[in-house]
Image (cartoon, rainbow, N blue to C red):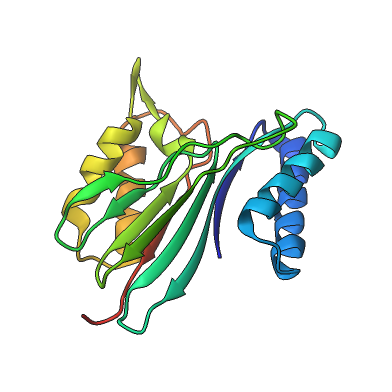
Length: 190
């Protein structure tokens, strides 16, 4: 299971909600709940106990086929769509919106079913990357996608490090928000 998220706010209150989210996901998924059910129950918990905080999440259940592909069931709850980087350098956004958790009594979280061939990667990130500012200009999602394309063929660690560096170097200012990039890459041999 891949989990990437972002909690509203900063400091101890945000850290407390982060811990709550992490623990609820562990318990629900550990109990065998489906990801859609886990998101609904997590939303209920945040509405009731999140002290007005909300979070966005990207959840991905990952499996492997006999042919060496990775299967990914992607669920987005208000989180930015990840970048699918194909081994040949094509980069596109995948997944569909969904509702942030902790804001409304009911949520939607459409599922996207993906297959990653050997050499393909799925790049998750937080808005600290895309909302990085240089004056009035945002780093943005398109710039992230375009920066990812030439990194096809590199390891997950290199892709994440280079994208992080590109985002940080976009502005001379210190980052105002957390910058997180997680790369899921199919390293199986073709």
